[in-house]
Amino acid sequence: MGLSAKRRFASLMDGSALNLHIGTEMAAIDATEWDALAGQANPFISHAFLHALEIGGAVGGDSGWDSMHLLLRSDDGQLLGAMPNYLKHHSYGEYIFDHGWANAFERAGGAYYPKLLAAVPFTPATGPRFLVRDNRPDLKIALAKGLETLVEKYQLSSAHINFLPSGDAHQLAATGWLGRTSIQFHWHNQTYADFDDFLANLSSRKRKNIRKERASVAAAGVTMLRLTGAAITQAHIDAFFRFYISTIDRKWGGAYLTHEVFTQLGKTMADRMLLVMAEYEGKIIGGALNFIGDDALYGRNWGADIDIPNLHFEACYYQAIDFAIEHGLSRVEAGAQGFHKVQRGYLPVTTHSVHLIAHDGFRDAVARFLDAEKRGVEAEKNHIAMTSPFKASKQTPSKVTSNPADPTDPTDPTDPTD
Image (cartoon, rainbow, N blue to C red; front, side, top):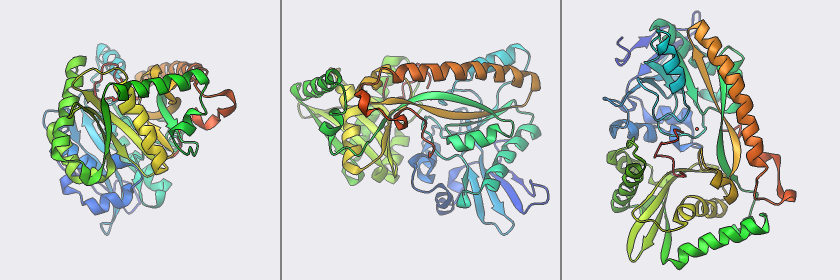
């Protein structure tokens, strides 16, 4: 098919002064140009993060992820738009499940793979997917048309954009893309003064339970360390990778991320990482990796050498809340799965993805499925919200609606909250 080779599509938009290029590696894309469009709010769309996945071997090679980043340039070469994009040969590491779609299409004689996916690999966090100058709608449309052109040109089954902002999802749905919703769990900072102020907003029983859990970790002799920037050493990275692999081994999963990925992230993004480490009897025995955005903390991976009751909750949830309050962040995104998150202050929100299905008959079948699924998602979210640990007088709609600014395999070991 030749899709993994670098290609240039000149004058893709008839009558326009736009040119769409395919970037097959982040190393060949100027970091300053890319980051000027990506901004600083979301760490996962930065050049450094995407580059680390490539040079660390998590994508490329035989991973099933072939980089096909879209680059929209003017006639004089200025980068006006970009999109992290991949040619996928499977559906792993996406956190939006279409395995059933693939099976159905192939049973009917179609070839579902390869497909296009605009997303951040292994990262179920909502963020910009259309990286465009001045947030221009016409440039977003041009990038979407670029995906549509590639699907048609190479007779692919589909293109998908995962975890995009709700506004962009709704705009694409109006042009014929199929919209899909999922549920995640986020903690929202209501300008709390400290952790006790947050607890004061919970029902008495939930407040007591959280205090009991935190006290049990301290009573076990565990000291929690919050590290970022230069405080994160290679020894910390090595230890965390051991925890990560340990979690995967216990879940019979496959390691998406490599030691080199974590090492590279430590070298280039330490200032945007929060590594929560648990120390016991003088040794680091567990930890949780988070990434710091302008207004949010994103929980990603977790693991431990030994099983200490409630350490998971302390490392992944409570330390994150402490950090967010101390640094004035508006929310903590803890990913998908886990009713246990609700009882610790993380309430359900809606996330969005959109899907372009080339085959008309198959598209109609997927559309019917998504209509039914959406009703189920909303019913589930409303049911979960009814079990909120917050006092009735403290409930606000913002705690249960999607975040407009900015989902996971049940056996996926990379989610820190399972």
